[in-house]
Image (cartoon, rainbow, N blue to C red):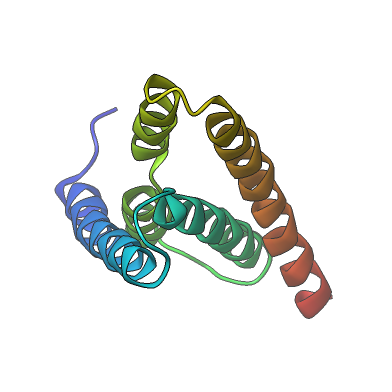
Length: 130
């Protein structure tokens, strides 16, 4: 079933904001921590996963969100903010540089921390909304 124009526009608007936020977080991490490790990507993936957990639980239990708002937040905003394709590129770059241990810790740490972020977001909202 094709998406309505309003849903597509909601995704586009959310994506623009999410991608802009990702850029700002990445720039800040380079400024604060340097370029030796892709901290910005780690931060946005963990933060985005946490936000997904919080917002999904809120949407499921307390909020009445329109299709457009769900598309804006979950597909656009958070989809634009998190960076799995960038994560993959960073992992391959570390690997191709021969930095095997940083590549291993980057991949495993990012995946574990992002999944944990989502669980923490869900748990937080379950406690707050209980």
